[in-house]
Length: 531
Image (cartoon, rainbow, N blue to C red):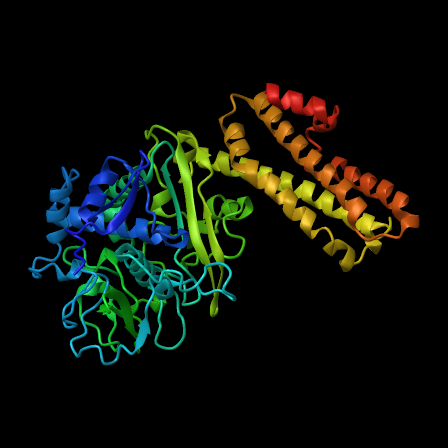
């Protein structure tokens, strides 16, 4: 039942605004012409899981068929996908529900001994892959009581390809660093395209990058006939798959689950396992995943509650000796058009998550994008990025210093205690938001500037905006932080004085460009606009 190759099970919202249901081959066909704007049933935290699944499946199918070009239409996509499972005449591996438990179902391994061990029951799709949160706030539980087939489809894909460790018998995926981590996404997509443009850009780069992937990870994977769809293999929970038997773009499953029909509705039955499905603990998630940054120590990125803030992205992309960028961040120097950074992931934790984070608002010029991976241009770009980060931090230090002195009633900085410094936290975060909104756009302008004079103008304009925002926040903080009324005037004067002293110091970041402090705020904004 519910055959993904033939039945219109996936609800798709088209670019023109209409919504229709499609089969999986129909989805690929619509994506190939970039007609798909979104999926009404797809929840935010499932977006990367679905994108990665479509990309890996597309690459596997095209590679196995020896195709150099995309299929011409829905029927060709159907034949291409069916060609991955020729031994199953009734398309069982593509059906959401298969009554015979000894046969595979979509993302569900065969259970030759039946479902006696599948004792846990789940009646709603959102309970199947729900984010583990401290309270029922971030993602509401059990809201999909009338779940459609694609609710279950997306839940299955997310559960099987993104889950971490969740107690005894519930092991996580191989493509993450430890059970309390999560699978992240960091990549580039064509800025002027939609979901289909992003998907097929990734598929093209994954196909061309397959030889390099196999060369880098020669100790893993079967280069010719490795298992690609891991749900085809029976699993009783006591055996693990060897990485050396797998295709480099294998689509994994990490849980024993079977969908069943109960009273005319889909439900899930699950069972635990003695071992993780894939024996990959020693790899620490470093398996060549197309979207996963890997530390120089060989560990897959574990996202933190900092998410993809500008300083975290700086560490991932530019900081020397920290991370190796994933292949999804690599584009050729001849690629035309702007690129859009796509960063997604869940911050994992022990028995919980620290939130879902997504960032797609950063647009990158072709020259900047092609410079991310190496060469002299990358060194220049990284130097500017580091200098700009230090400039932001200098303004932050000045703001924190001013607020701490104000909260202390105007004491010397050496006499300010931790309770006063702590009051600067909310204002520092607001200044961070100002920096975050501009960091990459200003970085690009400085990198592409035609000369030192233009680069200095851009730098000065950004510094003035940051300083103006910090000055406004300092004024607000002086009026809001607890301080004896008799000391309020002294605290204001001394807070502003130390704020500006910090910024203008001869050893400071801005000492090489004193014109930053020339003129009032309105003049600075006019100069920046003219530049």
